[in-house]
Length: 296
Image (tube, rainbow, N blue to C red):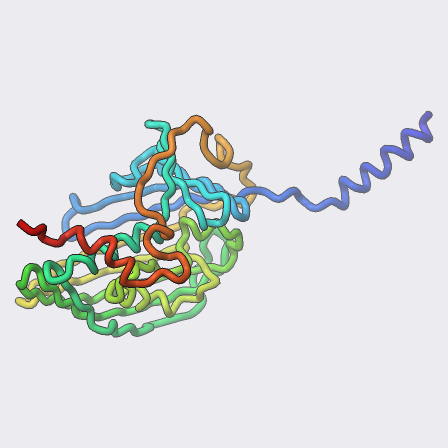
């Protein structure tokens, strides 16, 4: 009997010793802040996220943003191709198509025509410094300091306004977070609206960043100078504050309860003309009537 037990147990012990560690979820916590020249202009957002390759569950713990208020959650099961905004308080879930939302904003601006028109000069982007960055939560990083300068000319119901915008951004990125769904919250790419002027601006500084990395820390200081020389300053910050590579996964698991009501939040990218072969004019046509004056 003892010989039989040894023959059974010995292989099990060998398997236990040679097997690699079980894959674990990545937990992280971030802090985003923005503000102006006075303390009452400051707004904070604290989020906690769990990531397992293509899956991510993000909890909004503190927020001054009415769209993503405290207590809401974000979920993706396919690396960010489809994102859901979950509201446990009202037991609702909405597809949060970031591309669709940005395209909608761009289409609305395009449709306003003579009511609101703006032009942005080609951003003058200068890399002030680039090199190894500080160690962030045990990860090696790369740090960029980028200066941007551009002029914005706006026409509001025929009235022209001109502003000069000067920005200095310090961006810290890493390649040590390979999970695909990390990019849902820690941005990897500049936003695209479909509006040529806005996209030109967004791609200015981001085009200098390694596309295979994710942002773990950033600070941007902006100065807006009016035609009369008046200056208005603001700033934004984003930072990865905690990281645990051996977390046990989100408290309630990934996803959302089946009984939650599905609601529409914003147009999806498909609705905004992202399907292959759709013409640009058709896309504008669907939203061009929003701001046209009705006859009679």
